[in-house]
Length: 321
Image (cartoon, rainbow, N blue to C red):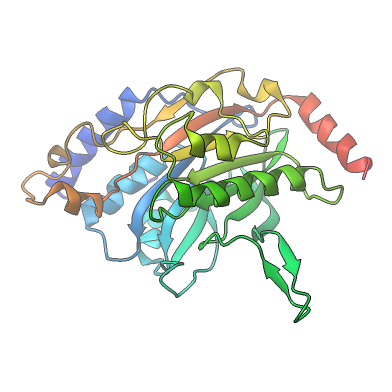
């Protein structure tokens, strides 16, 4: 990673940001032994150009992890490229296409990863919900509308092969509208894990689910078919700037308990009550600053990936197909 020549104001902001990152206590990952995975809704990333300072700040935050699922990545990828130029040549991206109508909001999903820590293994696809044949037309019609189809991609880190699956559940007119798409997503993962031709059965389900509280009806909807939250991020912290709403989630299909023995995880609070010390001399409202960095905090966890028994179990499952 190379910030290059930056102004004094950007250097001052980076120094403040790095002190805030230290408070998150993110343990370093070790090649082929552990990996730091994060999910981050970067507010409308690409809709409007970010300032030079913000590009450096976003790159600094992303660099704390090895594999990041990015939500609200927009159609214009110019700012993403600016960030990746700072991160350096080891960083790669797998991303979805965008939908041009208002429901799709021109959003993409992206998986940004350090190729030294994680390897993309070939699967990248949108998630298609269940369909039912219309007896009148003979057409197979979708039974659920996610507005923005969830997106998945397959990776390997150490001994562990897995699929990352990201979703951005529509806010809607109220919590009631989110229950059906959350249940449908939980059901899709449940069914796919039991399909004998599934590319992989180990899922890490992440994204912005617009679930305010752990344990409420929305959380029960997404966890009702076996997905679980790792113990390391089970606390009451939130991922909005006030840290009182748990909109973002990391959920797992718990096939291998040894993956989560270290129980490391949490949020990275780059905000700490104010944006102003990150941007000395710049006068903007809090809302305006959220379009510079984000109105969501990254949520992260560390996985143990140095367990040969995991790899052997995965090989045996494939041979049974």
